[in-house]
Each structure stands twice: as structure tokens, then as C-alpha cells.
Image 1: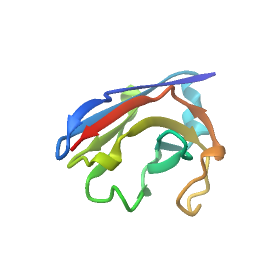
Image 2: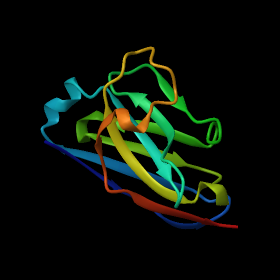
Image 3: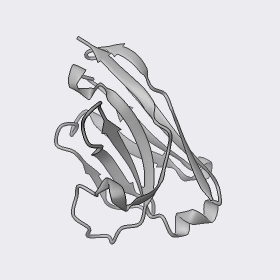
Length: 130
């Protein structure tokens, strides 16, 4: 069993920055199976949407067009942690942010569907005021 725990959410003004963290614990051998870590976000009444994803073995990183140039996904393998650095935040970035782990072929088209991810965190709220 694997647990994902997000942290780092909060309230900021537009133009500000936040860094989200997602720590994976439990059966760490899942790294050999779950080769993609991703961040999703969701607002009330809307579907969960992919924000960014990375292949944990290195290489491909993808972003939603709305966050390109502002958000950066990265990892610290030693700490089983994935980060989402969010700069120049906008009011439309306000959402609950979720960390997810899944398995995808190296050339799977982005965006990765939420239903394909096997593990999810509980979410962390990000609120951006204009």
C-alpha cells in the first residue's frame, strides 16, 4: 500500500508563489511500477484536471498550457517527494490540488486521464486572491 500526502497549500495574493509537496510512503517499491507522478487540481462542480506530470525515472515532463512558464514540477528521489513550484499565481489557479501516482508508457499523450492514476493524496487547498 502507498500513501501520498500533500502539503504547502495556502492563501496568497495574485502574483505570489507557493510550493506544494507530495510525500510518498509505504511500499516504496511502487517506484518500480508507478513511473509517473502528477499534480491535478479541481474546483467545485468541475472535473479534476492535470496540471503537471513527470516520469520519475527521468526524461519527460509535461504541463497544462495554462501553467507553462509559471509552474515547475520536480522530485527528490531520496525523500520520495514530488514538488510543484507555483509562481506568478493567478486567481484562476484557485483550486484543491492533488498529487497522484500512476503508470504510463513513455509516449502516452498528455493530458493523462485522472482515472488512470492508482494512488491519490487527500489534496491541499490553494487560494489566490486578486
